[in-house]
Image 1 (cartoon, rainbow, N blue to C red):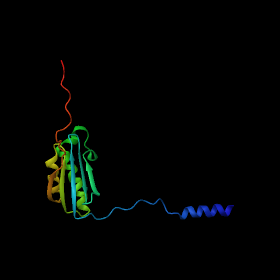
Image 2 (spheres, rainbow, N blue to C red):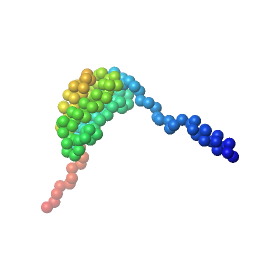
Image 3 (tube, rainbow, N blue to C red):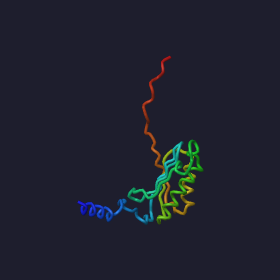
Image 4 (tube, rainbow, N blue to C red):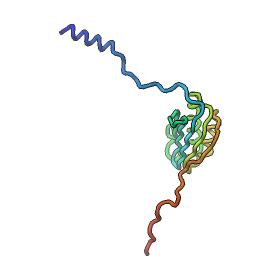
Length: 142
């Protein structure tokens, strides 16, 4: 009995600590895509490779902006700059930019990507546009 307890304790002591998941790739591809989603309330930036795998992301709220300040051009600039710096540190050099949404910080965000050291090969607006929209409400009878 005493020997069994000792062997169990020894086995537990030799067991490795909790195994963490896979480590992320240390290097990003040279070419990628920057997805900038500018709404009236927030700016979300995601940098991915050609296949769509996320390499770096950032939001205005994650950098200390709260409430209505998240929708400002300055918040979009800081957000884009931080995400682009992460991608540059992983080895990315050239990007295509896809901008979506009606927010204020659209142009500022693209400039911030260029200032961070990424070469912008193309800029595309992918904001969804309705092809006739929703059915309007019926006429009001007074």
